[in-house]
Image (cartoon, rainbow, N blue to C red):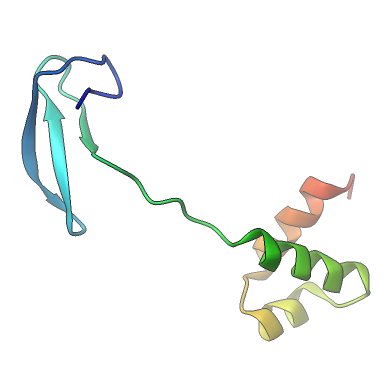
Length: 83
């Protein structure tokens, strides 16, 4: 295993964070996990929310129907158009 910051190989275990093993680099002192989970919604959810919006559904109605926060849907719309 290598440090993601300096790529040194002198790594030590450094406890647990949220159920995962944490490591520390002895060279630069960076703390890190072996692997990270990707957060976010599936592309199918994003596409469906955008379809509902462009068909005329309000942001808060999408939030109530799908369970995705209305601010998230607003950000998706801003990314796809010049809002």
